[in-house]
Image (cartoon, rainbow, N blue to C red; front, top):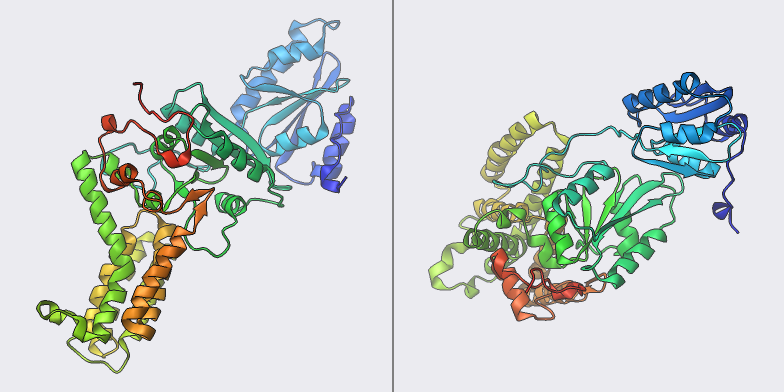
Length: 491
């Protein structure tokens, strides 16, 4: 038996022993935020352990007032333990019988009440984690729709989800992962819809995580869950919108909530899941379809526009006469492929700088970069104007991709295709695109083909990708998730 698998220590019957344990092992008296409130009830010692900043003080005051009143209202001969159990004015009260549970619950923000002479304590959930109120996520804004989004509190996030699905079969299984961090992770699914095999796989993978802490929250969980290595393409989808998460639950997906993270992990997902946006479903089917197609065009442009233009620059004979103007009209001492790399990496510089720049300054920085740097670079002959044009179009396509992770992966593929075209011209582009498609086709996310429903081809499901169907016409859940109940609506 390893040190991490030691048998849990039972709760001592003496509050003095408990206090000594807390002082020696947890830092009671050393850490200013860890405290104990000592009461004398019917000549017995009662201690309340808490962590400042993680508890709702008002609830604690009400509980202490109720307990202190026992001295005036009860007789000495009564059973103090049962009286305290009845006087704890809170809806969430659970018994504990080990020191390990006491420490874990106190450090999680709950309070623990222990009575001298009793080997059982009470845990009261009065957590009040510091954080912000639900608000619309910056990366998933819609013109019309709900403005609440997930926050860094797992309790709030599960409540926002249950508010949208008031089904008795909705389940949230919670685990504490991390030897030191004890991070709360919850698995959300609808019991009679989600695949039991999928639930078991995710449950086992999460329980098998062995690490000191999950301070990076959801991303660390994803890396343990999928083990994707250096594959740049996202194998799960992140969302901060409760309506998007609830929709995927009803499709049969399994959600993973990680405390301290406002993003919820949706599993399993395909390439096309990362191209969806809530705005499509907040508009009519015709408008949603148009928005989807425009988004597809933007993604295609972000991938293939620059390599294709470079091919035409290197092989002008491949251009039809009607579009012979596509190549650069001016000549530069710097090869076009080098210009494309410099400009593309420069756009990435701007994106990174915008993230680390205060909002009032980022707008001014963007104007300076676009007007001064771009124009001066053309004037001095560093870039030809067409390079700036096509880099701008490709960058807009990158920013129009709903998934940030997918947009970065597509940019890496675009740079790879540029190198292939620069080295081998037309064969390089053909071989590069073929290798890219084969690479995506070989990816599997939790046993789900990444390019489904394109590969393997499913005509009906592919039409759902191309066209935003009206909700009354969408009666069948995606077959790739292997749901227990395929029909969304009663037949």
